[in-house]
Length: 355
Image 1 (cartoon, rainbow, N blue to C red):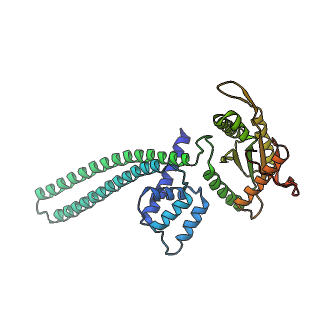
Image 2 (image 1 turned 120 degrees about the vertical axis):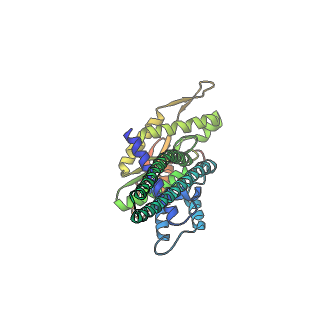
């Protein structure tokens, strides 16, 4: 329960920062702007934060056109825009209601302040006890009215807070769904690209190691051709499940087709090799069968390439290194792990389709 409460408070804090930025910069409180500032507030995309912070230095401001450009660049194009817009619009309506309540409260306070000033003046000018008593009764009535309005406002704001919290959780669920591969339920390519960029930046700042594993299913095309695409989907799910059970501290994503990626932050290439061997053995240990006939398709195996981040290396370069190690594992006979540093540079590179 304490963990849930902490998560809720964090979500509310992030949302407050996002909405605060929208108000501060005078930007439209539309779903596109809110989503961009929510991602900014989480700090999960350092490149986005750096670009926005650079744009806001000095007297510069972000325009609606800038928001559209940043959204197109940094927000996943695969997200369910309809669901996101629907929920975010409900949140915007809720924010609008809160603004109305606050404006009403401000008006009420201003009215009460006027009544106090008028009462103070009337008390000073009172010539007898009856006039003074009437002034005091009016002030007491105004105070009670103010207390009732404050109590009502408090109840309305609490109800609005609960509704807003639920809507923000729905937005977060849509965001997570947009970064998840529907078939395997691991991260999708967008999730991988964002995470690798972020983790490389973090590794550079902290001088920590980072290792990348590229995992490719052996003979996947043959499985699809001989046993059908449904069995191919089952194999993809199996590999994803074994990856999740084998990797306790890392980011897993479906890189594309039958290829998966594992990002290991603060792990050396030797630790990466051990984890890769664990993954390879866990997948090979399962014998899969065709659901309809019970016929065995044999053991599913994978080839894995392992690369460690080097100084000044980009995301594209470490991917290329891990990919080269992966195809060296294919050349070696498949169902094995190869580290970048052990590749025979003289060996020809073979990239067989469905290998």
